[in-house]
Image (cartoon, rainbow, N blue to C red; front, side, top):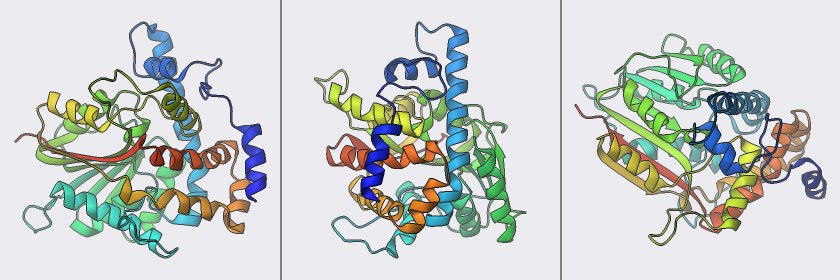
Length: 338
């Protein structure tokens, strides 16, 4: 199976700089700038680039979510592990639950009856794993948004099966233009969706807009390493590696944890905290690769589509990025001023 996957990689991975759903090849930096409305991009091209990115993300998750659920369950995010402790197969799903708990603990989300969150939004909800967990944990109402119609439908179906239809709801919506009034939510939750956002400032601003005064905002996301004071950008070989990951996972330009902190500061948010959890997620990608190389994982992968297969083929690049200290698994939390 490993040999077959490697043979497929050379055939189905497009060259660096290929932009999914665009009719031409563009350097990743140019694509990212167009998608976020960068300087020098004509308005029509900017809108087209952003729309193509949204479409690509939706199609990727429409195609791949069923496979993920079959193999890993309803939590579509990394697990949290103790560093340097070898994880067994049975540990991985519990590690995903632990990731949620560790994020809540880091942010200081209260769980007493008076102060616990009562209204939650899950931005980039997948098939609703976090939404249902948070709704049950706090007895809260939770609304999830995703670009994928398949994810939204499946999230609603799973919630109904678990008796949570009155507590949680899901809809197709853009995180950069959320369909909620201002100040609606006590807890704003984004678990591994920020990396898909072409405009990080707009993304965080929308999280802040829908948060009520005093609400906690939690962002768990993929970042690149912080730049040193003498650096203006990542090194060319680092950009090349990220380009290949972007091509497969429909990602615009990456940013650093420090960039997120600066955005939070610019929006006058309070109690801003961040941490690098890269060591705590180290066992995750090797485990995903091992699951893909089981007979069930491999045969299921072949029935999905080329977007999912291409995503599987670049999984070793995520491991490489972590080992080179280029990719960082970051958490950023803050509060909206009262």
